[in-house]
Length: 275
Ligand code: FAD
Ligand code: A2P
Image 1 (cartoon, rainbow, N blue to C red):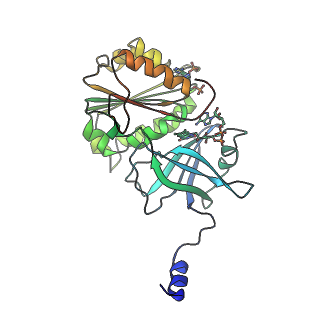
Image 2: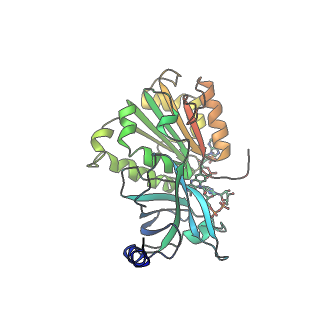
Image 3: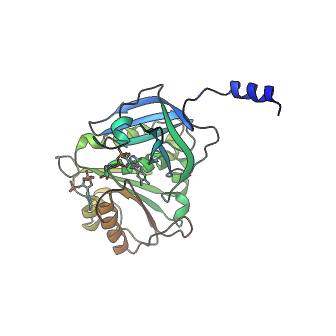
């Protein structure tokens, strides 16, 4: 390529001020601690629903400040959606929570992760078990037709301390049945089981307790989990993941991975203190 061609090619590309920059198109604040946002999608980015990427902002030192984020939008969506915590003194989210449409974020287009359909053996019923922002990868999987092609039933259990923290997931699930693209795949296959633990609501209690006591099976009219039919994906705090694994193992399910599909898979919703 001669110099002039190179100059013309550069001029034809949209001007970006950051490396791997994407433009924010929409921001919604759900609570003082939770927000979601959408950004433009790099044309070359292919990902499997449930995977995560590194996103962030340029730090004050001129270096990118990046964190892992589950892609909450499905793989067919033209844009990318993320669902985020706001940590008051968090290096990234203390700044990220102030983004507005038109701003740029950094997005490294290398998706990875274990919460993918390929990491599970075929089954009849898929359980999606999340606390807090752990619902993000499942917001992607619940909007992917492949999820409903592979499973007869999908159960989304989401637990937060208070009802307002369930709202992002509740609105998403509600919008699915009438969605022109995904509605016919979802049909009545998706069962939604939101619970709170610190505010009175219709259904209450930790996911671990509702599974171990059998309450969720009774409430939804389903048989107890078993290795032959049930598959599970888990995304929450380290303590939640640790405790729910024990419950799933109690039902005879075994942990799988991309390279070794089994009956359940786990991913951290964040890196924190604890186990
Ligand atoms: P950090 O220094 O990263 O975190 C400070 C402290 O805040 C942590 O020690 C922890 O106690 C707490 N914390 C961090 N993230 C969360 C959270 N999500 N919920 C509750 N407490 C938290 N975060 C999201 O908000 N949405 C996602 O989709 C998401 N996906 C992730 C996927 C993976 C595989 C991993 C490992 C992490 C993911 N995270 C997600 C967490 C994210 O990477 C950052 O930790 C978060 O954005 C806070 O960044 P920070 O720099 O402000 O604070
Ligand atoms: P609880 O209110 O009983 O602690 P957090 O906001 O602390 O990240 O918790 C999010 C949700 O996950 C809360 O409803 C919380 O219930 C629940 N939770 C926290 N730790 C566990 C655990 N080890 N097992 C099951 N649920 C948990």
